[in-house]
Image 1 (cartoon, rainbow, N blue to C red):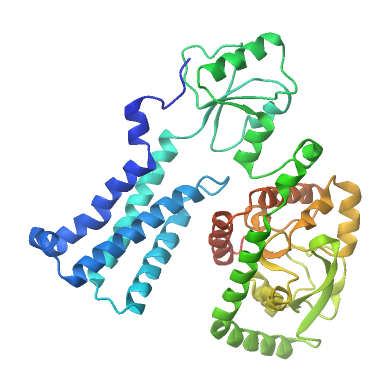
Image 2 (image 1 turned 90 degrees about the vertical axis):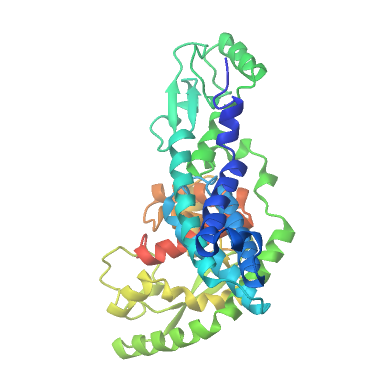
Length: 419
């Protein structure tokens, strides 16, 4: 038996380094040659040389970062390519301007466009040729893999791979059909064909950690590092301070619109449960008539309590801006599980195993569950939300936080999950 994509030419053509170098020729050298000709490439002036270096670094960073981001479940979407490449090139241009270095704006602009184009082509090629092809031992929790999107799961009819090549073999190692399957999995490992536990593969494909199996997982694996939490808090505060010129006028206009439309306080507070199961007062712009916002019940999509201004600020997530105060107080973060009301926490703690473990980190304004699932209004949907929260806690990193930021921007623009 042979693992898929093990041949030398397959490893070369599908490696990120090879595609990055090909892209550098297309996105940097090609437009430079088109703008300045061969002489410009041989003897560039300072502006041309600086632009080529900045364009290459911006392209290489965006290309590699997109490859890292696309490893996360549900993130393989071409919609993330254009904004990420654009932000990377904009940051490179701002750094060059801050350092007062001459650069060719024409090259930076053309290289940015061609970088988007090549990253999109690279994405489509990988989507076609690197879609996971899995051989599944049909027993136990491995049966959950059939029907999942973006994966080619093949049911094995016997303990053999035949002449087919697969990326990996997946099995529920706790419920194997018989000893012949154990020998088969050992033979796969000896042949360098990866063997994965079904729960591990389900987690990597769906972005969810099963709450029913938490007792079998290393609980310490769901604890973020103190260094990461400190760095995250510093970034949160820096982001709030940097966006004050934008958020302050927006806050004033929103407060005026709420006051003109209906009676009641502009800001309402509500008790929520935060890190360590500690209660705190969350701040939000009032988006409902009267004091109904303080009622412990789910808000429906067409809830009659929501005002006209409230519908707009909810869809654009403007009602969340006052929670910057909670972040500065150390009660929340920009990214993390959403804080729930006490009544919901007590209810879900009785109905869902390990529910309160989601409070091991600071709650956030946006998070993995919000951008993946959207708003939830039932216990069953909340169970899935908890599995998404546990995935974030287990895999929290700057790369995952960046992906959540990109998907949050997409959410704000599309209104996905707003209530």
